[in-house]
Length: 322
Ligand code: FAD
Image 1: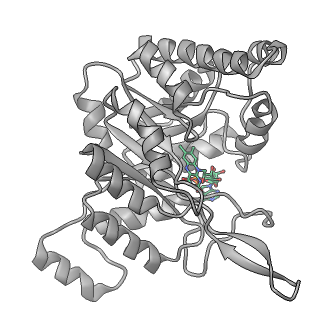
Image 2: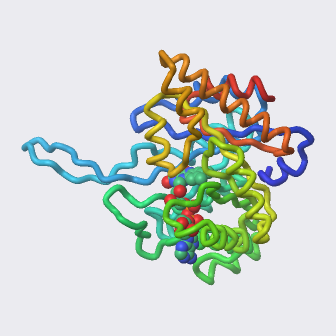
Image 3: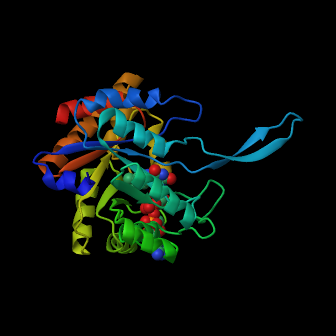
């Protein structure tokens, strides 16, 4: 079922969440460990992130270092399939521009269609660690909007190469992906200003996206103001708020540097004062509960949680809210 249908048909606020594929060498049971307790609350769908291959240096037998490209968290599509089989809920794979050319993307979308996946969250991906700016693969997409266009083309039966279009017409099995995209209540870090960021966000909707999931935020005013600005520029699709409970003191610095978000001073001071890790986790949970309650009371139909594969704190939040 499409994410937008879940949202349109619900009478109460729903919750969804995002998981990361386990690190290479780990077991799918790690994922079930995260999911099992949360399934009690009937999430309508679960997002699975995609992680681009990174360069690492591996020591060879003769002591030299060899540069290798390795996907540290492979398995997004397999995990989506496992989730749908085991729990019977929709899985939403993230698909990215980074590392893919258009042909690879088309092949991946065909796989997803064959697996019965109804939704995709379309993203550009971040620049690699050594890149100053994002570099697309040869014949790949530079911006998420172009990838949205490619998915939407397939939804209309248009493949990259003309001769396939006819087959599509005869088989009658059109793609019908519901497309989600990312939005940034505190602005994407590369955008020169919010107006410009919203201009390009609107392009993603015009090219075929049907919903937006936001970057994490810790101050609901940022979300409400973002929604208002989106509506002012004519973006009318659902805007799903993304919530992440803080779970360690180090995240006070890691989250802003990695995700370009602000953490309200009140929360920072409370966490800095905490005497132990258990208290830090509890403060993060309580803050996320307050955020969720306010969003729910404001009529938000679905709240999305970033689990970072740690179900315990999300369980507490969801138990208090749903
Ligand atoms: P875009 O929409 O392409 O925007 C990127 C920047 O380019 C923005 O500053 C935008 O304003 C600007 N821009 C857009 N179009 C144009 C144009 N035509 N000309 C000039 N400027 C333009 N990353 C992963 O690798 N894997 C994941 O699974 C993943 N999941 C995510 C889930 C969510 C909910 C969010 C919010 C982010 C996720 N990310 C993920 C991170 C994301 O890939 C990065 O934030 C990335 O830097 C931007 O992706 P985007 O899709 O927003 O890019």
